[in-house]
Length: 477
Image (cartoon, rainbow, N blue to C red; front, side, top):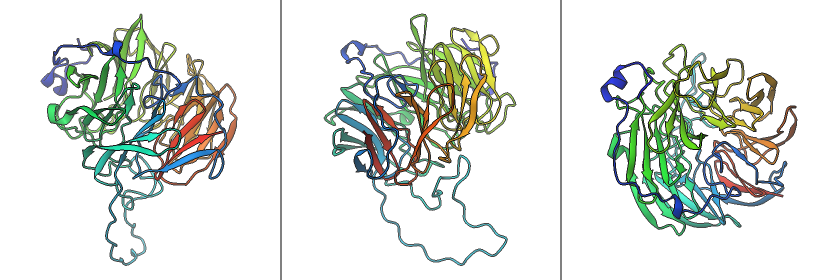
């Protein structure tokens, strides 16, 4: 069933298309996730929090609290994942040296120079796209030894890498269950490996279901849930094909279901770079998906839409692509958009819940355009794109404090809440450490190598794994 008025996009394709195949449940064969690991983007709970990473350092820098550092082949927005003694991370190969450019005459006064530099979603950080290459053409999965950072093996997942506005074709993060690791390239090729690096299966998603049509490339990370690998494809800027959710049997890559997700969003607004969140209602799991002007809840077993809320783009603007992912915590669903409005919904609804389950709506300053917010239950923390933090009451939206300036500048990585602290990493590899709680307290501001940093750190036990443009650092007391 659909709760969206008929539109050219939805009426042409319909809402639900199920690719029925035999379903072999593998969840019983997989080991239970240990929360001391960091198995996916945003951690063991998928919400940017962990309760088992303790005794974490508040301060670090070159020569201080750095257990080891490992050079990366190239820069990437992909985050590391950690299980046991292994670390997995996506990366392009090393970029080949480019021939020196011919010197050019300075631009006449009154004319603008070449594009690039900082500013906005397409700005590019410390070095803009005009001066920063995408990395090499191989899109790799690296396996590192957790104790030393030494590379154990690397595999070519895909080929074909390019600048995707501020990121490249390696942005999605891997996911692991302790026996296997799954990875998707920014071009849509999925591969599954065991921990020894043996490939188990592969699937070219665009080759099977049609080319991705995102304006800024593909950036959603896969979600592993009860033996299923969930892939989100919300697009429309460069295609007339419908958006959809895809579930694969994690063991062999076979399609379990594919469900279209209709939208009447316009121009660039159908595009989303979000990762689904997992919500449990009445003992049953739902996938929360944000993008294309709506936030929706889907049955995790079938993909069928259970509920839908409008309100992410009330003025129907044509450029409301969504980057920050939804956050679920203690019966609340937080759905950012392109800054405002940010919606807070109560879980448990069915059908159109745009009004019935709206708890509060934020239309003030400092809502995120890129970083995904985090909540500790009573409080909701959001970080704006310039590194400012605001704390709200999670149930009512009342301001507790903020916006407070952390001083780290432009920020793409998402905040992580661990060991009673909120860690916020900016584009120049600076990390602000803020005390979690009802009063703002900046505990520290830490610098590393100053390079272009888009990745969200991983936290396991007493260690932080922070990826900059050039290096993966293990930070520990």
